[in-house]
Amino acid sequence: MVRRVTNQSITFHFPFILNKLKKEFRAGTYTIETEEASIFGSSFLPFRHVGTTLFERPPDGQLGNTRYWPTSPKSLIKAIAIDAEKHLRAQQLKREDMTSEKLEHLYGAVLNEPIPPRLGNLIKQLKEADDK
Image (cartoon, rainbow, N blue to C red; front, side, top):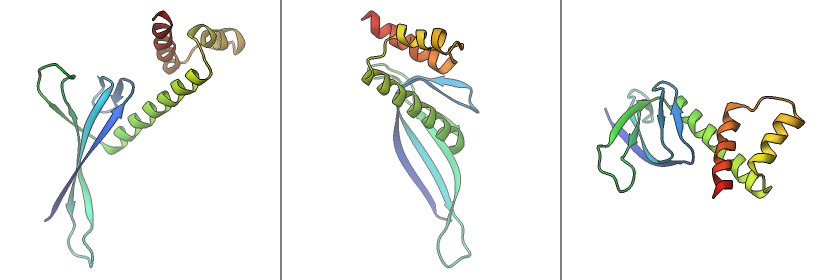
């Protein structure tokens, strides 16, 4: 049996949660290791997924242990997609010179809807940026 291991670095711009772990990870760069094993019996060498592991290293400048979290590709893809959506939304708001007050007004007064939880976090970050 042939094993194939690939490593990839992924940067999350916002804190994220992996569904099965139900743990919030901080924003930052993580190493993702994917292990595959060969399947014999055909004219070519196919591989099947064996496992995916997220490496959580201590923050830069801090001592600590690297933690290894087994996860599913589906959970990881979902976390990456949510992070990308938040990142794109934040970039769009910066281009539009959107302040937290404008965003709250848009939802509260104009749309007459409660602020969605994901957007609530973005408003909080914008308020922190407004205060600086």
